[in-house]
Image 1 (cartoon, rainbow, N blue to C red):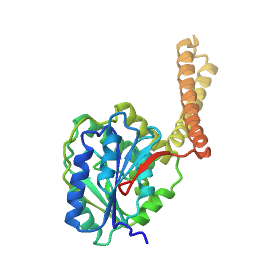
Image 2: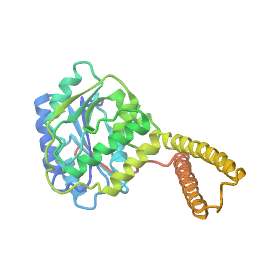
Image 3: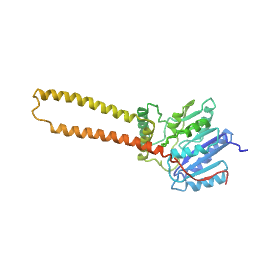
Image 4: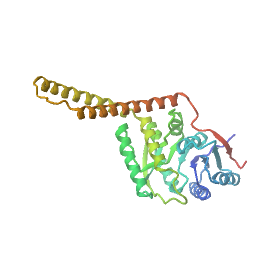
Length: 312
């Protein structure tokens, strides 16, 4: 009979060849303090460096380390989903591999969970990120909260501990666009957050460019909200009402012979303005239709190429 681990630690890996060994060592140290059975699930998101080679060695040397390699680069959040699908523990920790999420905090997260919570999130009170990244995260939280009417805390990311029933609920969400923190928010359950120490990146640089961050934010908003469409409907109605009022005004002026020369410039500006509104509205609608098309194809969000576990 298979003995299931009590805690599973899931961490997506990308460009971490100089970090991964230290990550596993720090996790093992934290789990030694907890004195419970555990497994470490590392997911290589087809990293272009030697991360996979290091992961294979770690899996062969440590039976508790399970290494997965995706068939191509699917992105951080699909990689997290791949790890969650393999997690067997009653409790599942999700953390980034760069050691900014510090494994020693797992002890405190687990202790808080034992107070009767299914979700305990790590709140990065003093983020050790560059100013531009913190600013971008803050802007995203404001924009996302506005468009979805759901409060999003930019001090909370992937790091946290989740009961297995929360994990199963997250995995059951069939959205083609995956964004783990928002899925956790959508799932509900009894949750809390605790302040944790956020460290500098152990080595290397973040793999998220500004373009990727903007794309992720845009996809998250489109996936979780139809408010942009509603805003354009309201904007279109407002323009129509204003156009009707202005039309009545100029009709009166024309009947009263108070218009000497018809305005060419105003006509051109109106055409360009309304054309822009129409094209933008069609574009936003097209994006939503495109996302619906992607959803209906039911393509897998990740494909596992290799798996190494139990020292094999």
